[in-house]
Length: 205
Image (tube, rainbow, N blue to C red; front, side, top):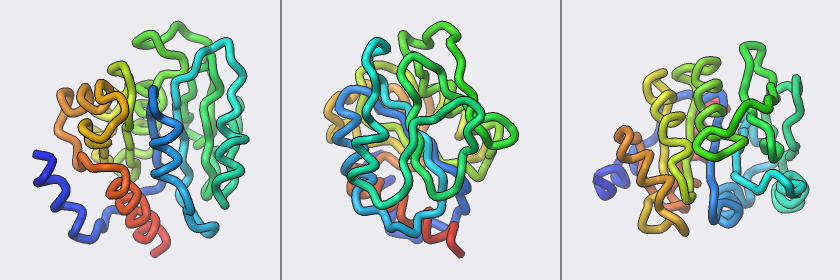
């Protein structure tokens, strides 16, 4: 299965994507760094990330990635627009969702799969707004959060991509997604990065 999906990437991706949502847990900072490093400063597609962190800890993710990337990086706030060309991180202790007007909403509803923020909730809300023009990427992690959200993206006609479990620092999260539905791509990080760049190239044209 994995070998077959790797072959798909060799054909140019022609699907237009207007937003990308990403999820990760244990090992996620390193995985996201490998996926997003050296993105072009002219990047257009807005991206939102849920990375599981302990609720009691202040997040420095936006600060860390702002130093590594040439694009604007923010911690998402309630009612903040999901603006083109920017990367947003969910704050710890809040669920992050995307509203119809393409702005963020924060909530303190109970954890989902022991997680707040929940990858499932971000992906599901984004699928409702963007439909087939959404791409979801799920990376390394130690629980099953994201499997249902990625399936929601699939049902909406969006593009789904999962880090190859054999490469993931913790394979539980990508394995759960693969068990829930057959993603469009199951790839190592270097190929997921190539996929992301192809999506940007299609978006620009």
